[in-house]
Amino acid sequence: MPKQPKKSTGGSSRKKAPEKKPSDALELLKADHETVMSLFRRHGSASPDEQASIAKQIFNELEIHSTVEEELFYPALREQGDLKELAELEGDEPETDVVDGQDLSEEGEEEEAEEEDGEILSESEEETEEEEGEDIITLAYEDHKAVRQLIQELRGLDPGSDQYRTRFDELREAVTDHVGEEEEVLFPEAKLKLDTKQIGAEIIKRRSDLASSMAA
Image (tube, rainbow, N blue to C red; front, side):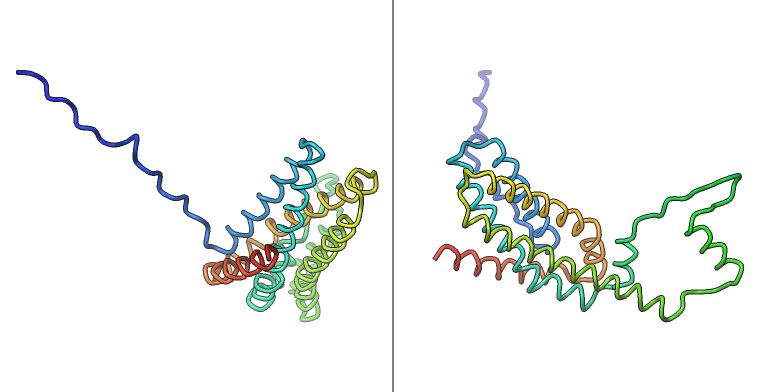
């Protein structure tokens, strides 16, 4: 009996499903971080003509990203997040000095005193932690202000000058530090306390409006 020809599955003509775009606020903001850091890497190995175009993309991306964070993300985190938790996330683990099994660091002495006296954090200490958490958000705004100032200065400089290259390096370092701070401290708290889907929808709409105004 002759073999029947195999039916074509049409696999070669199938269209790929469109890539799902993130809708969660943290995914959107992380995607912005990745985009900007990728552009910085491309800028480093590009030709002078390409560098000018890439730098413009970096500036625009940073301005849109900063605006949506300041208008939507930071206010929500300040209102709904736990400022004490933010302060704890920000704090580095203290170094411990151990001699003959005894912890001689300041932290160790404080812990021993608390254990001996059975003391708990006073109201003033709790307020201090909340203020530190508030300061972390305030510093994020200040980081954005510094980035905007660098962008403004760079736009007025000759891209071939030493001063431009110095300022551009400062911008890259400032953005890198800020991204690390956000992803290590602010994002974990936001994940626990915020409705990131709702904020994500607001970010998408606001980003679209900002991009349209820049293109006009």
